[in-house]
Image 1 (cartoon, each protein chain N blue to C red):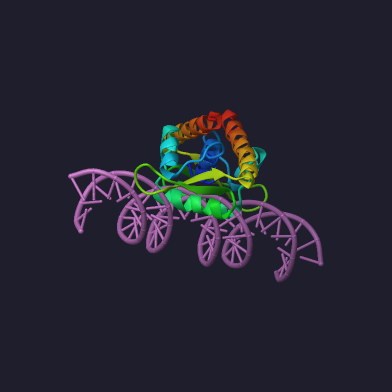
Image 2 (image 1 turned 90 degrees about the vertical axis):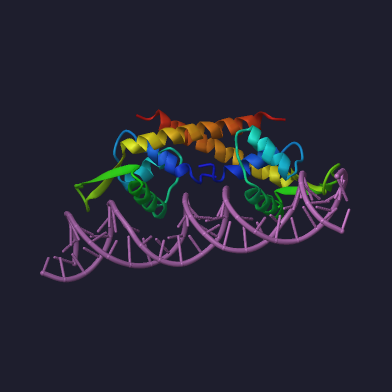
Amino acid sequence: MRKGMLEYCIMLLLRHQPCYANDIIQRLHEAEMIVMEGTLYPLLSRLKRDGILGYEWRESTQGPPRKYYILTDEGQEALAQLDANWEEILRTVNILKLEE
Amino acid sequence: MRKGMLEYCIMLLLRHQPCYANDIIQRLHEAEMIVMEGTLYPLLSRLKRDGILGYEWRESTQGPPRKYYILTDEGQEALAQLDANWEEILRTVNILKLEE
DNA sequence: TTGAATACCTTGTATCGCAAGGTACTGAAA
DNA sequence: TTTCAGTACCTTGCGATACAAGGTATTCAA
């Protein structure tokens, strides 16, 4: 059921501050959503390719450098559309739950 | 984004009264969710095969007989689980939307 | 210089939803 | 009585998403 929600959640997460993959996994985990590495990396690459996300390399104190992703302006517009979709799904489920 | 939501919505719809395919399409449409025939029929067949749904044939005043589906007892239990999943997704999105 | 930790990425598989097309029953018009 | 439009059910092929498993590369300390 979480299918398709991941992209929305990641865009919400990256709308204000940049994160690299392990940040994202951890912060989603804190928000009670589990995501696998093998799911996340291809998704980030796709969103970058589509212009939704940008990234910059940053040095790490320990280990190799990290790719910090953040939402682009185009991504902000796409996020507004997803917000609308989410509201629609909320309405649908609420209507169905209230029906007898 | 609606991926995986369809199954939940259909189970909500069939928890109280039986419907056949066109009923389901129309009632989901009223709840602002569009679903195609080619999506619905395989999904109903799968849920039947998994014991989530049952059906009975009913004569129609016009046209061929209809398959009226309804949620089984096992389906009610599965629905309770999906309700819990849905609440979790609500929590996740709310947490992410409130973050700065 | 070797190994553990960290980080990024790829490949193969399963599932879901859609578009397109097909089968079958009914009743009314030609 | 034959034909046709309407209704209802179903299948096949395709693209997209998520996961499991495995692979590559960098860093630092033993």
